[in-house]
Amino acid sequence: FAETLQGSSCADPACAEQLRADWIANGEEAIIREGGDGRITDIFGVPTNLLGSSVSTLDFRAAYRFDSPFNDNGQFQARLQGTYMDSFEFQVNPLSPVVEGAGKRNSPGLGSGLQLAALPKYRANLSLDYALKNHYTRLTARYHDGVEDLTATGGIRPQNSRGEVPAETYWDLFYTYTAEGLVGDGTTILTVGVTNLFDTLPYALEDTGGIEQMLDNPFGRMLTVRLSHEF
Image 1 (tube, rainbow, N blue to C red):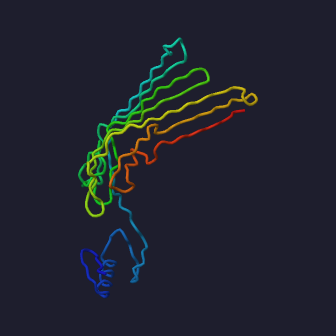
Image 2 (image 1 turned 120 degrees about the horizontal axis):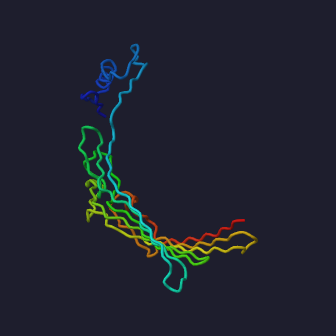
Image 3 (image 1 turned 135 degrees about the vertical axis):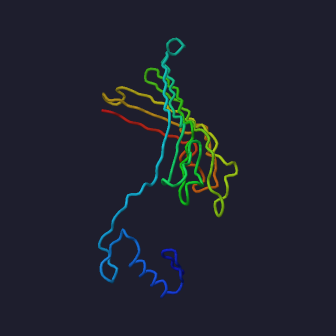
């Protein structure tokens, strides 16, 4: 194989050995060597500015509680919380271009081997809770905005045919029953939950992993049951 040092290359073993010797004698100033064998005695680390980013976001949250309109049977509570990402400026080093990542996924402007995480402009959770005596239930909608897919194409990585990861909403439903004195003097709690209630499938990508794991989950509808008792 050809060996390359300090801008020169050669395939001949003797030539390659000479290149190594020249580099040891006249090369990297941050490495101090002693004697003719090239043994390293000191290495000086030079500070280097690497990755940098500037982020501008807005977090919001609201909640409203109200009694049931049906003969005072229980209480409702609506909640909304989320994040709006106005800007996410990313720079690999001081000499590289500044990349705007908000609303995008990956970018060929970052250089080889670097990818930008999926950064939707909007993420939000909206839930409705209902409580009546020992019963409690919650319905939640989890939403993420769509992102533009800037994944570099070519070779074994074909282009995302739509050029985006579309927006999606997942629904979860949970129910909890609390019983006092069911077993001794303790509290028994039974929780049944369904994640991804409508079995929504994530958008498929022609990419590593097959989906955007920062936004979606490969699992479909999942049922969970939990029983606990406090003495």
